[in-house]
Length: 259
Length: 269
Image 1 (cartoon, rainbow over the protein chains, first blue to last red):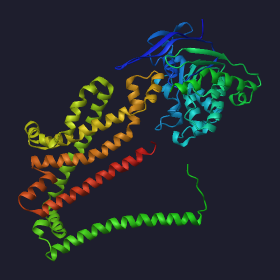
Image 2: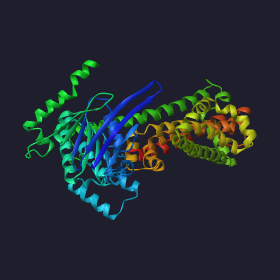
Image 3: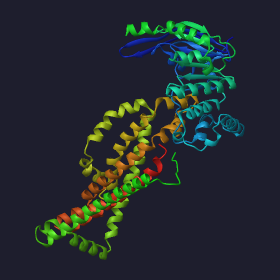
Image 4: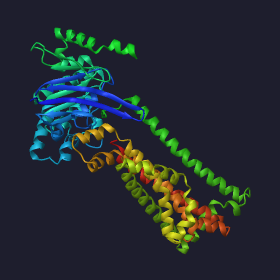
């Protein structure tokens, strides 16, 4: 029994003009502690797949299992991070971070000190009363992560979590967020279209084909143990090798020709 | 965040001085125009360029104001009009928001009522005047209904579009927290729509005045609207002009109140 299993998932979108198959029989088993990245051409249904795992959309066919049980009864195991931080501008940092707990009615003393510890270890405790527009992009993304982690999910779904940041901040924030997630021991499913980001973070990398999407191939990434963080991985010998392999696999050139 | 320098450079000092001077010139010019127009009006009447019977004049307006004040009915009329406007304005905003909430709640209901809203919005509400008087009686109720009708429809349309423009991903975020529709409304839709509310308030201030004055024209019992109509009928242009000026000042004050409220609230957005 896998930790997380995507089983025979099909997804069709309907409109008056007709029916589009987005996901065509997706099967994937994920073990606890893995960092899985799903990569593929734009419009291939990566985000759709993530939304299905999160229980936000019901697939046309198939199911998602968490430790053998239906995901839909285990939705509190899931934390979701978006492209943008989506902090609420009318709430200060602290109020933003506890929002999820408040909605679930789980905000208590124990959780409060748990969050306070997290804020302290990620250098945010002095900014508790600051409003989002007074924080930098990197800080905001960290706050968004802590808001997600406050609910103690075991699986994190990241939907292009760094794509709204500028390229230098992006590398730094990616590195920071990666280390926070690893330290917390979470299982991650990330969607991205940035190959180098995928290679620098993942333990396994799933390449999807264009629509109707199937899983084209899965790469296990093995880095020397000296390269522990995304930033250092970029310096590893293997980085370029994996990058080129995946670049070819996605077939970007082919895709552009077809357009 | 602002960096506070203890020492202000000469360049900055010059900049501050210039800004202050500009601000002063702006206010000075504005006031001058007003004073000039009032003077011109008065002198034109005194020198016989215009007929004060048709145009009135500042001094005649002041005289009329004093008469009304001495008779003790000036503040009664002002109070009645203000009361009607504030009630119409508050009710219009509240009722409009409640209806917008219901339409937001159900996409189906919202689609069903869409063409009705369009027609109601386009319909000149004053056309309903006689009907309103028949139904709500020849009194304050009719006036408030008129103000309400005018401001409610606009509120519904603008608040609903505010509700609907809230970022879908933020709604999704709350759904991943397991939020109910009511929680989404409370924690996201309402606070995110505060700027929309305020712009609706600003529009409603103006529209309530329109509704109330129109109502007072029709009912013709009390209030500044009544004084305007009555003054016209008995050829007392001083009374008409006085009422219009009081009205302008009141509308301006109410707008300033809403704008000050906006400034306080909107900072975070």
